Length: 268
Image (cartoon, rainbow, N blue to C red):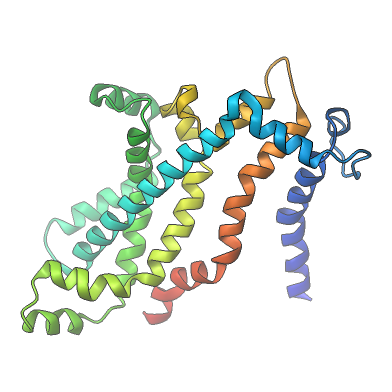
């Protein structure tokens, strides 16, 4: 009974909104304006899809390109630096570790200051640039990444490090050849979780990446919703196109996410 109740709650919370969006994405503008669960009287799924893709000179395609570039670059840097910092914090005991760990926790707890961050980006010439947005995503995601890597590395026996050092391996070689291959479960988890988070991010591109050339997928929602014009059916179609890729990633990598998140707890 508990499992059935949990499934029913999950269906209502997660599946029902998706069905609502899909139904209204297939309606005409007049039909979608009612915002109900009824089936479309006239199915316009393909017509709406084509219109959304072609809107504002194929802005959605540009948004997909920008979002993918930002996501791939940010995830690459997060994995590299997160694994390195997590390894150093776990394996190299020093008086600075507590200070560094405090900054990592502060990055998770202290809310971002938008205006000072914009000022810093402007001074560095990174405001309104994709690489500036990549650095913002890395900065905001690094705390969680370091904590997860640190927890996972604590489950790897130190004997492996010592055996490699005895065989003549240098510290960097120990990390690259011994530790890094063992981080695959948590790395897959981080790639999936952080890529969904970054790809779906709305507020940070809105603040730090203005301009039509820098549009990301979430910002394309403004194409069909404004103060004077609302094309609800196209808005729902846009939401559907933006939602499907992260949803597919989550469905296919669900087991890897759970395995990576629970590995440290199980081994510890």
